[in-house]
Image (cartoon, rainbow, N blue to C red; front, side, top):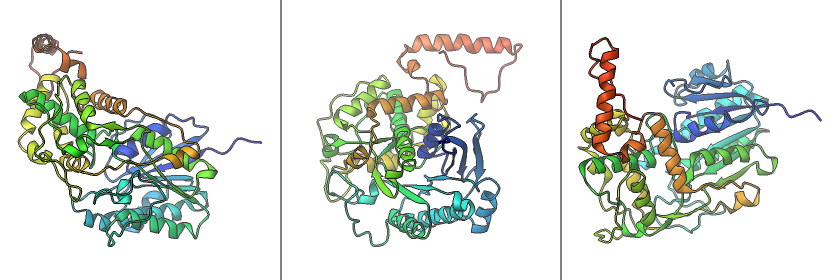
Length: 419
């Protein structure tokens, strides 16, 4: 029997956490399995994937349909597997539907039109809001068999799924829906929902000003069991689900496979950055099961802190603009709940998905990716003695001037940091 023909992937939202992880995952697969990897985003992308299989096309799926088709026709006609991770954010949840349902409808109609009979599988990524966890307590653990809640037409995940199901009923391709919970991962640019970069910024600024970081949620969630989704693991599940016959036309929850408690997890994050965080015992905000409740608002805290972040970057390295990547409002929501949001992944386990990730290790790997990308300062410098680091950096920067024939470098050139 001849080997199966290689597949061709189409990944939207490649600059986001999920899309970036999907591309990173696919380029590590052999070309005999994936011959081409076509990626898209609304804005231009600096090419940093060196794999020749990766082809970028800039597409705004909210543009006119003719414009979208014109972009896709030249390179998307042999797509076999399409992965939708795109998302347009506005703070008003009720308005998200007006943007994100048409976004998906245009994507799916376009790939269905252009790829035609080549298309085998479509994968839609949604999330825990499918179950209404943003509104209040739900049956827990969340599982794929739960009925939809009464959303009054506002949950855009339902609109996306309904369109997927309607078009699928008229076609030969199959579908999957993947529902992660709290995605942790790297992205080379600003992202609408990034807990990892937000908490890193908070920790590092607190350290610089001598402020002990406080958990911004409430007493209930501080002591609550939580779970999350590592973007690399999410990519693994997405590929697994879309490349097996027995998993077609199924929705799957995704988590790392473990659980954690912020009471112990938050101080461990502090330790990574060289900060000792004592157990929090005073709680003006206990948590309200009927609404979100936070000890303080991260967005309010961050209003005057960018200048401090710039000071951190001057001392240790990092991207000064990264402070604007902090999704403070999202972190407030993530830890402001007073009800559990655990998801069951039993369905995927029973059908053969067996990956496991330690959640704390996924945060560390994510921080290291931001460090390697020059976005966060190198971690070892944060643990070094200040006078030593300043002495070494002074020597290196002095050498730069000598190498530049005695001419000082441009004022906005970042200093070379000791490694």
